[in-house]
Length: 208
Image (tube, rainbow, N blue to C red):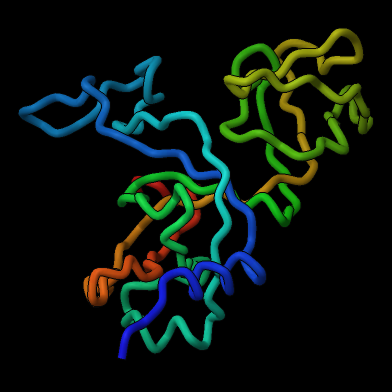
């Protein structure tokens, strides 16, 4: 029997989901003795990894029931997902700690920041819907900020006052990092590059 990579790829392209993949590599700020990254490093923000520009791909997303058949449940968290990656997509080269943003769906987010000190978010929101803060016991609403490519927030007008904690709400695309490339994965069969399986974990948990 000979499996066909082209047929696998065509099937996954019809039912798959779109994502943006960012390849990673170790940041040279890591101390070779302690293995710890430099806090506040301008290239990795203290993560110890640098991520490159996003590359679009299409993949299959495995249901939670099927995931249980492939990976021991003790190594999985509730928010983990498994991808099946066609061999004709750029993300086929994914490695552990690479980042993935799911482009076809969004989820709500809500967080707080301190005006003038932490006007920054570590992701690109698809939409910001509200900016609120408390002033003299009253709930105030401000203008929606602009988000720069480095995640910094700025207002032309209607910004929260300096030194005030404000809440920022909206929607974002879910982001993950490659937590595990399955040891049982055998993507080559008779010379055919078959789909790969990898497990992704929420990027909020990176380094934890």
